Image 1 (cartoon, one colour):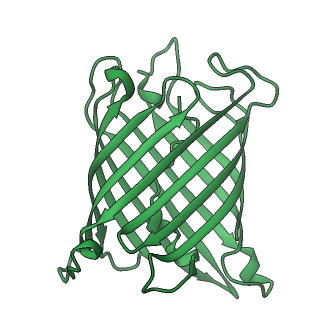
Image 2 (tube, rainbow, N blue to C red):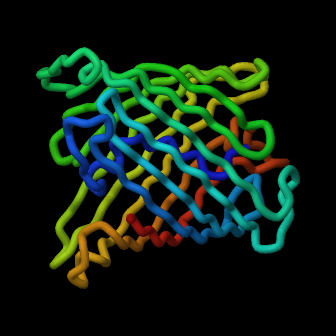
Amino acid sequence: MNYKHASALALSAALLATPVAADGLLHWTDTSLSYLYGTNYAVNPPIQQTVTFEHASGWAFGDLFTFVDYAEFNGQEDFLTGDSAYYGEFSPRLSIGKIFNAEFKGPLFSDVLLATTYEFGEGDVETLLVGPGFDLKIPGFDFFQLNVYKRFPRDGRDGETIQITPVWSMTFPAGNSDIIFDGFIDWNVDSDGSYKSNLHFNPQLKYDVSKAIGWKAKRVLVGTEYSYWSNKYGVKDSKAFNTDQSVFSLILKSHF
């Protein structure tokens, strides 16, 4: 059971990345640590503190995003994992534009990719996702991605669904610094067996503290994350068991 399902993919960190030689195999890289504190979570214990390690990089053949969450439940016990849990994703994408040296000049998108994700962690979570990805051109956005997956749960258990995942980022000037609005949506649009259709809307609003105090931009960010998740983990919401989640969390994030 994933405790924070983050499908934000590799280009989501491109604006924060450290560039390297563009003609080599590795084009850019970014690594970060985040701390979140929130209350009123559904399904799992209501109070959670989460440390997230993230790495993103751009390559000659595509891009990569991977993360691992470690969640503490403030001494309370989860019915599957005890007083803590971990969850992660490994998400490489293969770029048609880069591999075949094709330039996409259309008004709607700048690249087409083969998007994949492997979900792993404690409990019954191992799943492979495969499908097309698109880098879209939308005015006002730093970037906007759309990935459409077929989910293949391990051992053929219930849960083979189509998942639609948009990922975005926008930057707004705020005095001598910036406010960053980014996030993702995971929408499982059909249901197979016991795994029910669900929607996870997960935006973050962060202030660039490092730029405000004269440090390198976008290296220390503070703000809030909102997590709305209907039928969390694909479990049907009911009067007996609430699985619709609505949580605001404080977030501190550092890129290095």
